[in-house]
Length: 356
Image 1 (tube, rainbow, N blue to C red):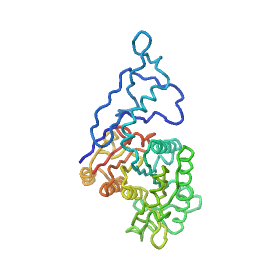
Image 2 (image 1 turned 30 degrees about the vertical axis):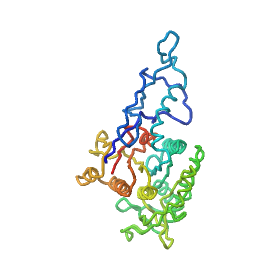
Image 3 (image 1 turned 90 degrees about the vertical axis):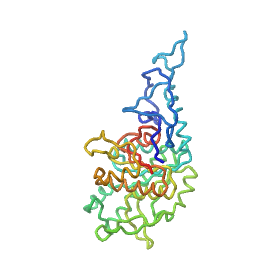
Image 4 (image 1 turned 30 degrees about the horizontal axis):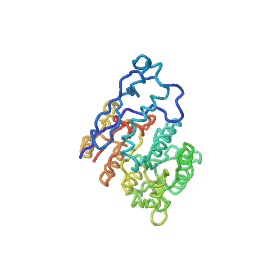
């Protein structure tokens, strides 16, 4: 059964932490009118363009008329917006959401803070987020410091023994622990892991390992170590490094790791943060964004050449996850602040949702 988007007006530019620096003034006094749920996705508010939420009716003033914007009770606007979150909090509470974090959201301090705050908020209202990360730019930086020239073949990093050692140190020892620290500081409890911890992931060499070196694929997933963490309200933060049965470490694409984990955990949703708006019908026209598409439709777009390059492995990752039982998958624009909240809690979303 095809799912359709069904959200409520955006929380995207409503900063939940820290507090607002000034009181927001609603532009209109019209009362909010919730539409009936249209699908299994989530009965939330919708957004168009920049953040604009129709204001609820102001408290009446002496004389019987509605309050003017100047007399609107301080804080009421935020409370009314938050109250509209109840339907989708009820829908997603207790559900696992796997997020692959990378791209621009990893390079920008402001976007990094946005992702962290979104994750903490989702955890606080009862969702079970799991964060999977790579760290390509950071790896390149450290390779440069150590005098090792990065080599890529067909868009994939060539990983010899010395490079693999650096990849493990950077992803597991630096990037992972930094993300854990940020999440903990924001008020949640994160636990940093790699695929090797608790035998979470077992790797195998990629088919073109002769050319790429220690670049691997996911052979199997054992999520046993994750379940007590998510059951306790912790946020697992997972580096995309795993070992084979002989203990040899491999660098694995973080999208692939996120997709396989989502399937093994029976996740409600897989979200891939990217540096593009989503799937475009015309790669040169950002306005041609495909908001929602099913597996059949996206395979047709690949066959027609409308989906190409680096988007193909992301789409294939989503399709594979859906085939293994993940409810919905989304490729979203990580350059947009609070894109996670936009995707989960609004009708418009922040990219392309792919359904089974």
